Image (cartoon, rainbow, N blue to C red; front, side, top):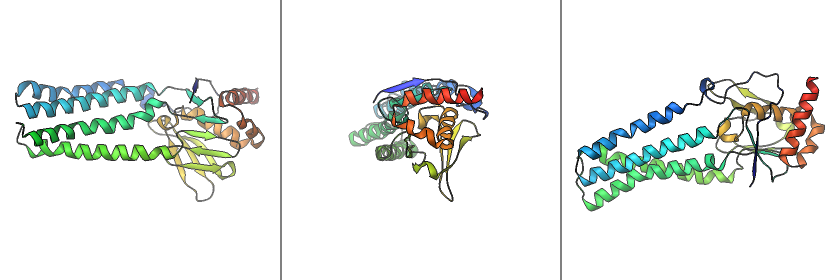
Length: 259
């Protein structure tokens, strides 16, 4: 799978909605999560009980790993960016491999405190006699198992959004789309803290909302491309060609309409 990235300024009459809250990358959130790791570190340094130190070490790794995952996710989000599978026919907007892998990493990180607590209980290691401290790790572990199971089941659905001459398929974790072009009633970008692609099926069909993390591309740009093919059935034959080439033609056509 080869991903092509581009940042065209596709003409659109719709107002742009930022892909980040308030239009800014929330890097401060990563710093806040890292600061939370200070508490277990201080407890491990101040207390010489082996079991407690093992538990606090695992918790520190989980928190720092979560901060690293957030940093990776934030770096995949960028205004106007389009990520397209250049080896597939049609336009396949795909999330980055990093964004797809993060849920698995999160699930594994949540298992660390539970594994540490199992070692503490099995070895009867000295720790703080607190019901919350000795049982909460197991709750985190169960949650981590749930995240891993859900993440493992999601690959059955195509990731991102694939536009073909016949219709649209994909969007993993934010709903499922497998519609013909005639089934697509409306397309737009929802207003809110961040931009979300809105796809509404005809009649009483479902409504799908997808942010940039699910698409790998700016929802404002994706909505412009989807609307172009929805409104121009004659142009859909182009979707039998490779995605980057089709996108360049879409850009040229939209600019020609502006003149």
